[in-house]
Length: 140
Image (cartoon, rainbow, N blue to C red; front, side, top):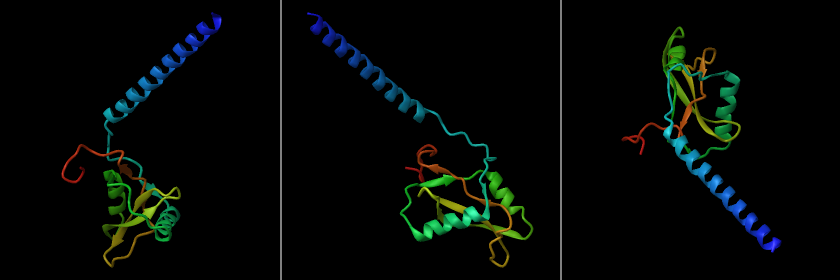
């Protein structure tokens, strides 16, 4: 008789744990989607020239089809790049982090078309997905 009772209690315990785990998975997943990404424009996107060169080289050595739709850069990185003396624009390079994540590297460009590698260089973008805005013409 005790054996049947023990088996029944084990079954109930497993059922309760399964329900709790399922509840956490369902609630955890839906709450992650419900939290919108907040942007300030002041995010830190600055990296060193050595990091930038390595990321660009990574992409050249192992080019991949991008797995992201796009990425967000705050205004401050563009302000930093464009405020350099002689900077007339921003150039981007396809790049890849050491872990294989696709990214872009931003660098200022002077009037002669030269990269201003001595100034601020941007990366550290916020990728979409998972951090996409609401669906629209560019984000479906």
